[in-house]
Image: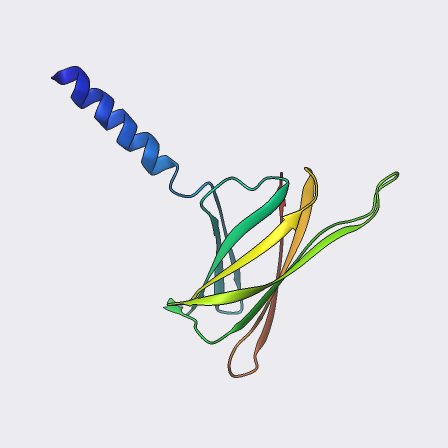
Length: 127
């Protein structure tokens, strides 16, 4: 009985660690963006959720776009993927993008609120 309880606790602990394989939080001028992916980001098609908060309140009715790119390097051309995030409600948006290969990708996130205020966040991730 103790062994099964121990195994169950380990399985639950491991499952909770896998809840979000990728997370990153960005802040600018009172706007917070949380990037979350349930699976690790990999070369190919990826799904990313963006959670927007203004003064700790979910920000709805915004236009959210992403530009994911890898600058040109010797022997390799510039690569880019653009995505418009669709609103899911409660300040959450979802975007799908394609990262053609492993490496460091630059990410620009463009947010326009329903009042016309514009924000641009910059970050990067490694595949």
